[in-house]
Image (cartoon, rainbow, N blue to C red):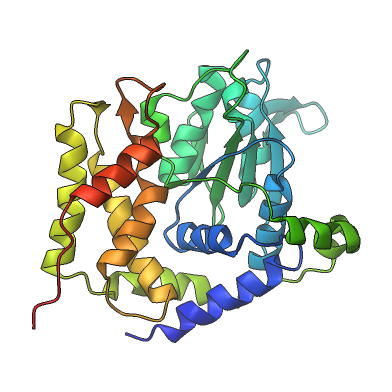
Length: 313
């Protein structure tokens, strides 16, 4: 298969987003992986690290409609999906779509909304459609939900249930910029002005072609076995209440294929599995004791213990 189209798409999106977001090329690359996989992202980070700006730049790069939704305890499901209202001029009911009908959604502080409102996202994330009063509406593609939550503040929040966490393709963390990067941001023009200058960099039909072809990336039997060794180890561990689901193992498999293609390879290597596992799997793990070990450290320890398949000469 030809991998150069994958590399070209990644390079164009990185160059475009980097005009606004500094020093986060690895995170932007993972968002590209999610985009090609038609997946969604859970973004955990403290306020003010550029989550909204990153997603707005990404939405402009792919030419998609962007909507930011502030999740609060009084948010209702109909505030997200839309409602049927009676139009007195026409004398009939008319559907008014909600903000979920955009293509790139930032669900800001998703854990501040009640479980009832959080559940409004389940159908659209899994099936790319919204059902209101028995009528289903298909979402325009590409479609991506990026939800954020503050990992430091838990007062007045409603933690996402495991079933909903499992529907996020990846969990990412931006982190702070380096000292030199932040000084550069302080001295440059306003980010909003730079954002307005961004233009779409994806050609019509380009993304659809990549989404259809990434499955041709070869995954050897040893590599597939290495993935399953990792998945099964989470299911056997006494430190976990629940391990990685089948949806999680499928997500890891697809992420490795796409990441390999973005590097210009038509085959997956063990390093791809190690790199993608720390983004794809940790939020799918439920630890017995959260205070002593977080899921990322647990997975990193597991990766150190599981033998890596070696190339046979």
